[in-house]
Image (tube, rainbow, N blue to C red; front, side):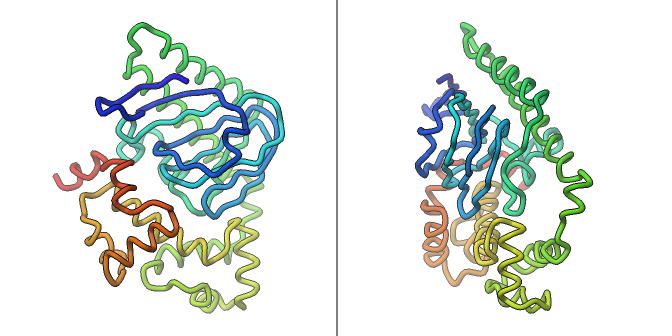
Length: 286
């Protein structure tokens, strides 16, 4: 394992080779995590989502997501992890466009399938990062540049996949409409039947279509959408827990905290303590 620490002794960036068995039980990392799987196949569990994969592939997770994999294959797996204090994906949104694409998107599958060429490119980038760690005084500027390149290339692959004719052909227009409705009404409509009625669908058909399309039930998506907004406010603003609770239309901060912990397994304050408050919070105030 190779890592960069903050002055407080927290991980800022690290890279390591690991065995699939190390990720076979649910785990929560404080950092953004990228899992590089050159070969093999399996199932990736990320919070409510369950996603089949076949290598070469990369899997992505946001801080404190509950993740694990059921993997078949003997090739070593690489993990690249970074804290937002080292690289803020919201602050660098224009450069890498990975926030809301690779991370923090409840609708897209948190993985990208790699070609042989892609696999070689990312393997070399991981090697470059590891080599920089071997220097007598590893340069954070160099490491940050490698990470930005890694994320930018990943985002580019994801965009090409989304815009590919095959992906467009497989779109379910009603489920895309549900996505829009949920983004519009997640603060006020919390029951699957509310959305089924808006879509003029039977509850049973709505649940089946949603689960097939998003790999999550409507209830799970509704909860995840609220949690996504809560995490955004906890990380990207300096709003108090009470202010976040009221902004999300919870009765009080205690009910909000119970709901948040039930879904994420950590309290809102613990989430904020572990992920930190982004520099974007102060920029927006300025």
